[in-house]
Image (cartoon, rainbow, N blue to C red; front, side, top):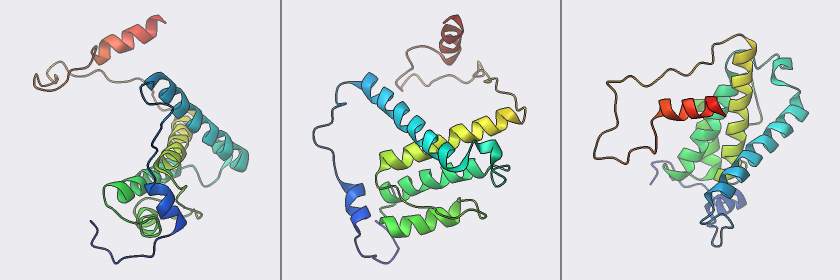
Length: 168
């Protein structure tokens, strides 16, 4: 799996490899999406309580939130796809993406928890960009770029989905 030397197994390693046998969300994607949103918003509340709103942070003015999110995503990928143990994955993800002027990077134990932290950082980064005046319009898919016929096609095109949201 990994070309890295074996590190001792830690409780975090065991926690992150546990499989949920009886998921309360199996067969209920609406509830799963609701819970996922709750997890991200809860983490955002924790971050805002700890640090204030992101625009109050002097060390969050140049993509640090985005880089912190990328580090958490990298950690999930390194543990899942890369097969690294938590301790080693933290070191690699920290070096790859975590803001150099920050400390405290860690594994939150499960992929879901790490993804929730990443999602909260992304919301903060989006807010930072909006405050700075960045445009938020979504570019349409070019007409020449269509979905290949051999793949599962979306229920509706992105243009149709955007138009439907605008009507709500």
